[in-house]
Image (cartoon, rainbow, N blue to C red; front, side, top):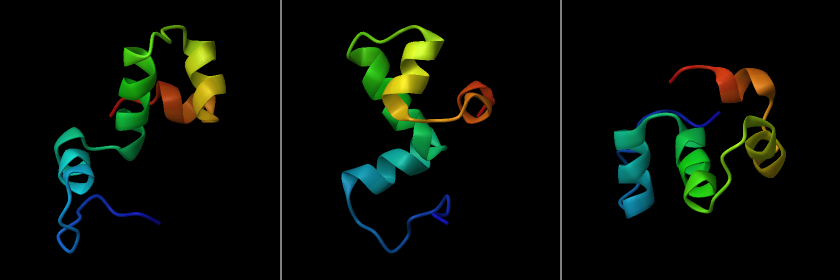
Length: 57
């Protein structure tokens, strides 16, 4: 399982994940910025379970 810290990795993605927190958050942000705004559409696009998508960070 991927942890929440990325000390050994030196790249913008790993630093972004540490700032944003949950790794799904970046993917959700990407989809929202691409215009997807409905819950069911986000779920379908990401292939994520309803419980994970609705869980607060």
